[in-house]
Image (cartoon, rainbow, N blue to C red; front, top):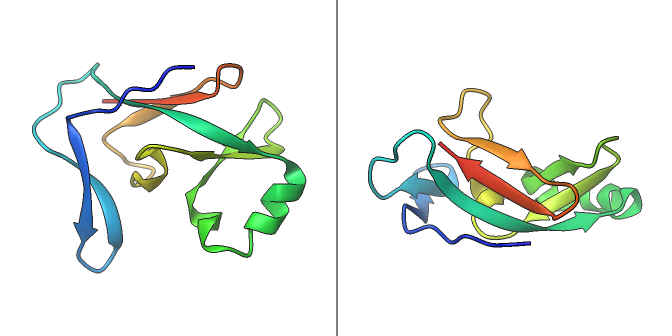
Amino acid sequence: MYYIKSELIEVRESIGKGKGVFAKRNIKPGTIVECSPVLVLSAKDTKALESTFLYNYYFIWGDKGRKTAIALGYCSLYNHDYHSNCIYETDYEDLPIVTGK
């Protein structure tokens, strides 16, 4: 597993929305923005998570979608809009989430 902390992005307050991740400068397509390690949760732990604040920050995880993961780094703070300007790829074996433009 590897981790890439990016100098391209920063976390700051988004008026009326809480914390958000913002580009510090223009990012070219094909650039890896961040590679975040994850904490994988069992189905039982996911059920417990559903009644917490973290419910809004997890990713469905694994080939069968029965587990979830909390991404470390900034990844769980990214805007999860269907029309986002970045994409992410998951690696269920080595456990990173790679985010790129």
